[in-house]
Image 1: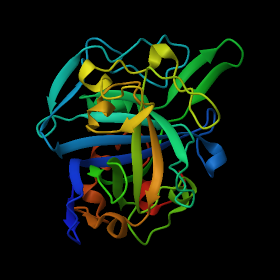
Image 2: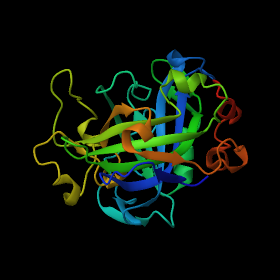
Image 3: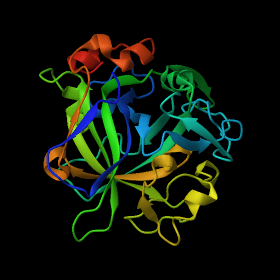
Image 4: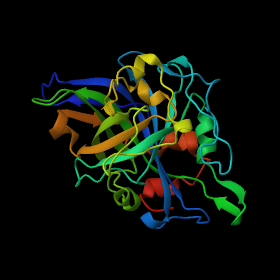
Amino acid sequence: MGQGQEVKTRNDPQVEIQERGEIFFFYRPKVEREAAHGTDDVQRLYIVLRPESGERPVEEKQDPHSGKEGSNPGSCGKARGEGGHGSQEVNIEKQALLRLIVLGKKSLPDPSQRGRPYWGFVEMVTTKIDDVKLALQAEEYDTSTRGHRHKPAARPLGEGVYRILRHKSSGKKAHTHLIYKLEFPPEGEKQEPQESLNVEREGSFLIQIKNPDQHGAGPSQFGGLQSKRKAVLPASLRGQFGQRRFIPADPPNFLNYEGCELLLISASDDIEEELGLELKGECEGDPSCSDLLKTFGETAPMDPLFRGTWA
């Protein structure tokens, strides 16, 4: 499918593209439910980002030999190591880089509630597609209280192109947006699960990174992950926080460390009006060029994705 292209519809020098790539959405039905028929049946919402180009072709990520990279994030009862130590350079134009992100509210931010932050975190960062497949597949496990349990495979929810960009609007501090446009399900098909989980045809979100050294306080702050699961960022990124709890995702390399916590805040459902950009995919409506189908086709049934229905 590729990263698509962006077209400027007005002159706005205040918008700078930091990263381009593909975005995939998945949801997982609750344990012991083979299918979801509504939001009450959903256990988790995942976003997978695959950057393919940016301000510089080489991105820095956590060292694969010094964290928890490649472990199954859904495994129950297994010890989880502290991740993120060390760093590795990846040329995203030549090698796959995938980030598996979990959304805490099991949906994207509601466009009608702008300003309300939705918490999430980076569960996995890897250069191996099989690691993500493993994380999304079904799993059988045993518990001491409920016995044998079955966790169903994640279901594909959407596929499209995304940008992370720097925006300097009049009278406001510079901030960072994550914007996307869906290619699948095709326009004109049903959008039942997408509408229920706030995955609109296109969306724009402010994206902020949480200081791993700051603890939440009060109802508007987030306690977040346990200390052993928080990101271990290199000094070059950690030093950008100072005493601030949240900062823009600038550079996007923050997202290349497992345990990185983030906030998404709905900005607009009309990218062109807001930012003067139009996102275009490369194969809208043609399943034969779906990268999600090619990459994750054996993980879960794909037909519901192209029909826009619950699996």
